[in-house]
Image (cartoon, rainbow, N blue to C red):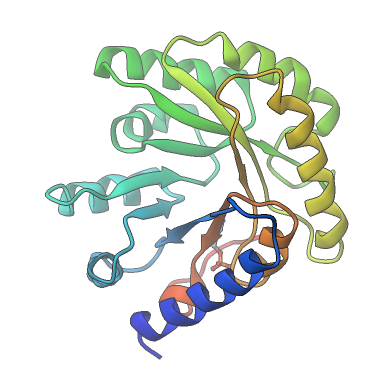
Length: 227
Ligand SMILES: *Cc1c(COP(=O)(O)O)cnc(C)c1O
């Protein structure tokens, strides 16, 4: 299967899921290109994809520089170390994986000197698993309130990586959380959930962005810690 074939399958599946929803739902496909070469990104780009996601700062930088003549919009979806915030601020338009105020503050400071605004989603540890990234639902309100005040950050919504066993219930919980904050925050319009294995389910439950890697690009060539 080529990237083109895979993209056709994904779009068809997405369309089927969307057709069962109320009108006006058009979730975005974010292509997760981590561990895949720039050539694969270029191929997907030539088939019409523009939004790509990486989860290592260094890799984001290399690929963004290699593809700097394109109109690719970069998303960052990985864990963030504070010494990498500069690189991420420079290259990403969206960050999905904010779970600490300290990181959001640093990104905002870097964006100020870069004279840009960064769209951020707060990652929720919806399964409350100890080893997982993300803020616990109980701590979410305080974090959102603080992030909302940062000058060079626009708070756009929430993101999650559910547990493998309870994704159905967790997607529903995420949708409830998302709805409950929509009135409170002005630009709060994105719910990033669903990956290769569960994007149809996620769309059915209200995702506005799905992050798809292996279903599009094939298995990742290098080992990669996940979930
Ligand atoms: C790798 C990754 C994805 C894509 O995973 P696939 O199962 O390959 O689709 C999505 N989101 C995050 C945060 C990831 O790290």
